[in-house]
Image 1 (cartoon, rainbow, N blue to C red):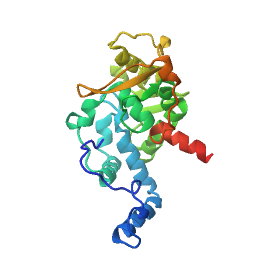
Image 2: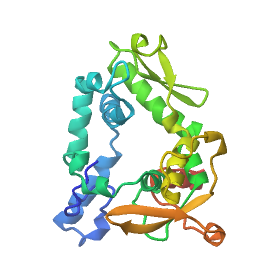
Image 3: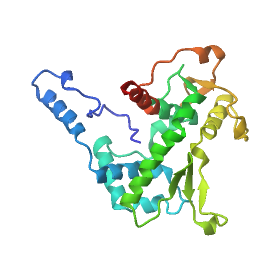
Image 4: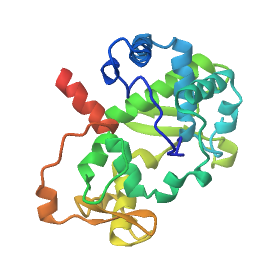
Length: 259
């Protein structure tokens, strides 16, 4: 992620010709940006961006791993396209945004497309939607298809079956097993960490079958530089929330309005 937070980068999604005087150079530039946005990427470039963004799904235990992906021409093209649009990525250890990160805030940002503010509420049902089989199938399906088209010389290290995500391991180092389910994309697994943060616990919720034990959390804002939350009360859970405008929930809301 580009987390330098310095200045406002104008993009085709953030500007409009109406933002500037009619006929001005700025208005014409905005119009060109909007027109260029309508020009779809080539299949190769779309796949390249998908592979570059999907590097986060891979780790050193997988076969092939993220280093194999990073060595491909498609990955390099995806990185080039990403940096043309957003600027250079900032390593996590240098990114101030990452220092504020908590698991709960990460789940909120995935669902709503922004960092949480004090008073924001995250529900277990939000996490259920963002990690539902339909959403996971779309997310991993695109990555797997892009891999098969652009890296055919290597087997894809991910597969999606029956709503579950599996990663490919080297059987010699994994008790003879080639495929292993990844629990990280199950709603209960992600909500477990949210609950532990909200309750001030660490590693104490071991039974996923008992999750959720709370229906939602409310964010308290930045405390000591980190997003904090607590279990939401019944009254807070009954509060009406605005329709999401970003993140996975925002995309689904827009699709529902169109349909």
